[in-house]
Length: 244
Picture 1 (cartoon, helix red, strand yellow):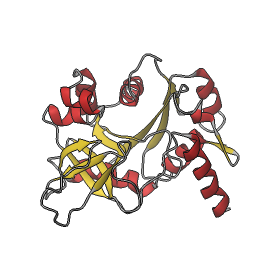
Picture 2 (cartoon, rainbow, N blue to C red; picture 1 turned 60 degrees about the vertical axis):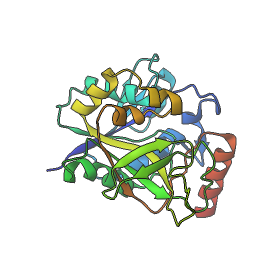
Picture 3 (cartoon, one colour; picture 1 turned 90 degrees about the vertical axis):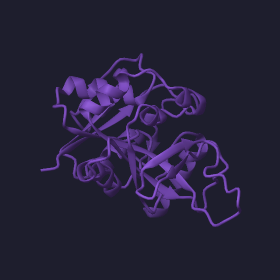
C-alpha cells in the first residue's frame, strides 16, 4: 500500500507578516486551515512541525500531532527532517512537505505529489507546477520551472525560463512549493551543503538538481494562494467571505 505522511513546517517569526501562522481567517487560524485541508488528503497522518511553543499550544486545540523543533533551522525542509526523525519513521516512508501558509491547498494536489514518487521509479522528488495565465511571470517571487518532455525539472529560476529567443509559442510554468520524497532522500538532502545555484537563485530545490536528484512534476490547474503579505491576507479573507 502506498502510504505517506504529511508534515507542515510552521515558524512563528515572519519578516513580512508578523506571526502569520496564527492569523485569524474567519474563525480559524492560518495553520489550522492548512491542517484541515491536509487531513482531507490520503495521508496516513498529518503532523505540524514548529519552532514555537505558542504555535504548539495553539495547535493542541485541534490536533495532538504537533512536534516542537529547534528554532535554529534555516529552512522548512530542515524542520520537516527533524520532525520526521523524532517520529522514527522508516527510510522508505514517503513524506509530503506542505507549506504552512497555504490555507487553500487542494487535498488532491497533495495526493498527486505523493503519487509521483510511488509511480515513477526515476523520481527522487515529486512536486507540482501550473501554467502561468493571470499571474505575473516577470515577478521574481513567482518561481519558474523548465521541464523536459517527461516532466523532469531541468531548472528552477526567479527569472523567466525558458528564454523565448526565437519568439515562438512557449509554455511558462510556475512552481508550486510542495514536495514528496522518502525519509532516506530527505536525510541525504539536509546533510548536503548549499549549492552555488541554490545560493545564487535563493531556491532550495536547486540543491537536489545540483546533486543529481531528479525532480518530476505534475501539472495542476489551480494555483493555491500562499499568504506572505498583508495583501495576501486580505485576498484570503475575501475568498473566504465570498464562499460563505
